[in-house]
Amino acid sequence: MKHFLDLGTHRFEGLLEFTEKLNINKDWNVYCYEANPVIYEKALETLDDIKDNYNNIDFNNLAVMDQDGSITFHCHDGAWSDTSKEKYVEDYTSGSNALDQTPAYDIGNGAVFNIVDREVDCIDIDLILSSICSTDPQAEIYIKCDIEGSEFVVLPRIIESDYLNNIKQIYIEWHERFWYNNGMEGKIKEKQVYLHHLKKAGIECFIHG
Image (tube, rainbow, N blue to C red):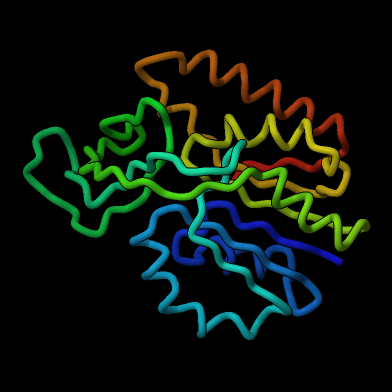
């Protein structure tokens, strides 16, 4: 059976995109993960509108990481359009992350984040893969990974997983720019190492976003 993992669901924008891109239908199982509790609650309001398009859609308010437990999640509760702080965008939520050193602004667009920290539960990506493959050993897994920098801890865990060969395609939005003050060049090199291992395992890798 085919399985789609939507890591960093936000408000299902990615799921709707990949439903068309991969022709996801009722022959698939869909698993969605959104760490930001505010966004999760808002996304729940639209779940009834889309859930009948799939065989099963499992939507979880969890951060996908390399461990189980809880983490501090830096929620962007709005943002200023630039460092002048003259214009405030109240519904700006993109870029919320679980990084040890969260950036104060996004060098990609200049937005200055209004950061509110919350404790959220997290789940080990290997546990997700194990849960799928233990009931479906022939599982074909497709992954969209847009988790705001945590790809740098999740991808090594995937590469080490016993279920690596079940993964067919992975679409990754990279966030090495979040290390603009501390080691961005190292993150770019790290990215290439992970891509090399994934491609060596026969996994098709694509840039998302």
